[in-house]
Image (cartoon, rainbow, N blue to C red; front, top):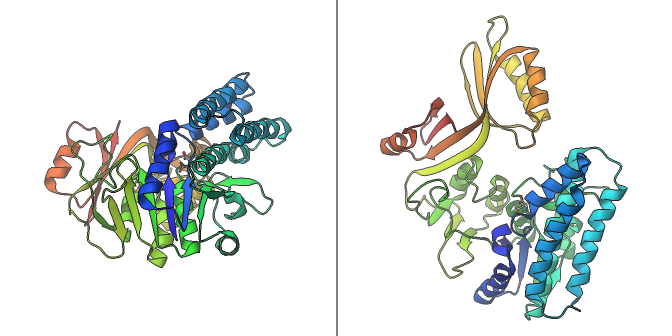
Length: 417
Ligand code: ASP
């Protein structure tokens, strides 16, 4: 069985959805599970809805209406008959959103977020599944929440592999074509949970692992994995072959082309991963497999924007050693703040942080009680894997550098934006 993942850009409008059918025609569609993200920038739009709902602004209704209009337009372009069942299905999903918000009693942001934002994927998969059915790509729509079971860590849920494996083994039809959502799962109480932003790749990894899939293909708007994000770096080149280890490193340092958690389940079962362009399904793209050397071998550039550089020193000039450091890391963990880079000296300790969930303020208050704290918000973390002197020189040009670190294969630098 193969697993395909189509991200937001690959279903961003009616033409893009039609293109999914073209890809399936070119690749064949039996024994296939496809994982679909929310359309275009829908997840961001739902995030705004959640914020507006919690701030009790009057805008919430009109923000929901905007998301409705966007999807309705796509549906109108894809389906000629206004009697088509898809119209009702989409309307019902939007009614569910309104009922969920009206009935909600929780004030917990992360919980509400997951109950609402996951509708992006539910809506997109209904549209894609219905469209494919109409085009003779007969398929079964699956609710990913019946398969992927997680803990209660809303917005960053951890998978319960045992139950997930049982559900997938029992209930996925291995012969035909199935369509399901990326990003979402559910907990023991059947509340929706999400796997973190850009988590649909990870969903593909989870299903592939549990199905012992033959391969996973991620369809993108770029030709494959490039040696840098083309929106940021010039003259980027396609990497044809990448090992699992290299892909994990690249994803960990922030290469947004693959979600960092995706590779591990694939690596464990040696399931090949292909990253390809949905505009050119027969193109070679990138293959990620066991042990293959990086080909072509060249510096790979990664940038993570909007990071925080935090430096701590003790209030009494005592050393920053293991016990303070372990305490600090515990606080990062409790606040769901990810550490990208660490550097320490005798009396100071610096880290570059990714505060995806905006929990830095409360953390800062706790740290200030114990340490002298300095920090820079909105900095960028640049990484070059397989650096050369020339690559470093050109990257450093005109940058206000705050910190640098070099290991055998990896150069990293934090600079002001
Ligand atoms: N729709 C989610 C997001 O935009 C998940 C994904 O697309 O991978 O983060």
